[in-house]
Length: 169
Image (cartoon, rainbow, N blue to C red; front, side, top):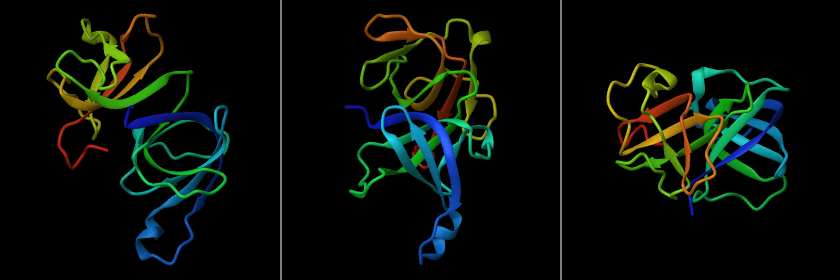
């Protein structure tokens, strides 16, 4: 089982999170309509990685990534804490996972082909260029197409590298 899962959908609302905790003032509730799960609420904290620091509004197409091992309240609609958010501008796919020395995901479903680095932007989580092979790190991978092999092979358009344990989602 993979640790992180992606949800694809359309943002329906963005509101401040209303709780009595002071640190919740730095959080918000992003509601989205997903084709697979229907209505979903996402808690977005100051720790949530947001690609290109995009500010989401109603109507945005979004990919939300959450931790499948984190506790979730048994309520409807489902509510997850967002680990990463990506604006989906062109129908791309996103995966957050640990990729080994062969650039294969931990669940063996995706292999990265980075033979021609001109096709792929490889960046640190702060937006700076990553100059080394991204293997043996947690990676946020954005891609369009894959082969039908196992694992599927893709040449991603963008790879975000999370270098240290503190940065790992």
